[in-house]
Image 1: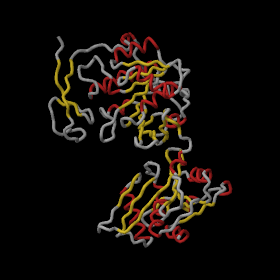
Image 2 (image 1 turned 30 degrees about the vertical axis):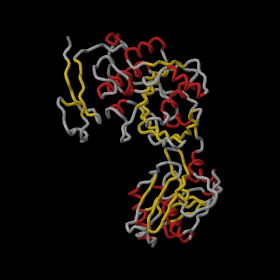
Image 3 (image 1 turned 180 degrees about the vertical axis):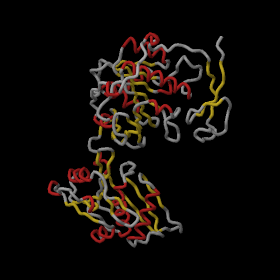
Image 4 (image 1 turned 90 degrees about the vertical axis):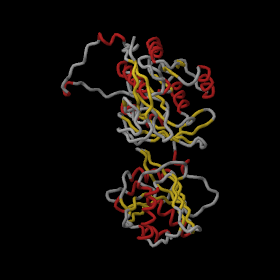
Amino acid sequence: MTKSKTQYFCQNCGHASPKWMGRCPSCGEWNTFVEEITSGKQEKNEWRQSSSKQIANKARKIQDISYEAQYRIEIADRELRRVLGGGIVPGSLILIGGEPGIGKSTLMLQLALSLSKLRVLYVSGEESEQQIKMRAERLSVRSNNCFVLAETSTQNIFKQIEAIEPQLVIIDSIQTLHSPMLDSAAGSISQVRQCTAEVMKFAKETNTPVFLVGHITKEGSLAGPKVLEHMVDTVLQFEGDRHMTYRILRTIKNRFGSTSELGIYEMRADGLREVSNPSEILLSQREEELSGVAIGSTIEGNRPLLVEVQSLVSHATYGTPQRSSTGFDAKRLNMLLAVLEKRAGFRLGDQDVFLNIAGGLRVEDPAIDLAVCCSIASSYEESILPPTLCFAGEVGLGGEVRAITKIEQRIAEAEKLGFRSIITSKYNLKGLDLRKFNIEIHGVAQLDEVFRTLF
């Protein structure tokens, strides 16, 4: 008879303790320890029971290792392909997280149905086969090589994998899986860690790519131990407001590509549609021109975007002025307001300032600073900025307009969308061939030069 024991695990970081603790010594969070019963039994994993017969690997000199460029599995979804770095790497373990109802399962089922030339196994621990069939009918995509399995036991899942021999596996979700090697409930820290380890072993031994769907906590981080993100090769975050139609797929970690790429989708009745030109949705359509609106150029990964910055400056009625921003760092907004007051002479100490990045996008690129400053100044002066003008520049504490990266891509994107002029730092124009652009490029060194030109 096997002997079981009780351990306490931190739900935030996975730290194990023989007794309950109020505060986790590893991550510092309070009241995160939960009790789990662990078994002393050592069962063999159903996957590769003959692993003991395999020959152990030997160390080799790095110059003796032959290397060929790793091919990638081509996928039709251009947004997902860009975020992954050019396609799916065989043997990779990809984790995608997001809020409930954001569209993770829809995105994964669309991927499974679109790869009609590959055998794909879609494992669901949350929905029945009939429910998945209903969603597939709504997506209106047909595939003869997509297999569906409603199962939560890893033992049964690996048996089906050996029978079907899929070329791609999708598991929705990792928190619903249960390994017979542990007695704890599905979704617990130890179960998530164990199931992920078993799936990773399968992916690396068979060179089969696996997608894992993960839940997130109320704080917005992926549920389960932090080691879960370290084990996988790629971590994707599916973001967006459920009340809006647009979704953003962002790379958090990627061993085979850039970690700052972005994919944008539109949620429709027949599934997720790729948005090939996101600048169009980030620039709102207005019936009339208004003050406080400026167009700024930003870069997400290798993709240039033009975003609309909206500002509203009004007199503080209740004494203490408010500072509110949506999609932009509030501390950086306060810094830019201080620069405007100290270096440009705007009296904003008794004014309420509200800032919004249109389209629901959150921008962290400092090149948007110049557009933010011009948007605030436009609202303060009640002056309308030209609709064919955009801005790209970082603003320093001395009021200087600093140089930014990838200026050629930003200028080309503005020209493609029909803008006639762009204001940027004059230090970006050194060595830049202006003759290949059909757009007016104005180089400035200080904020004062911009405001003298505009107002």
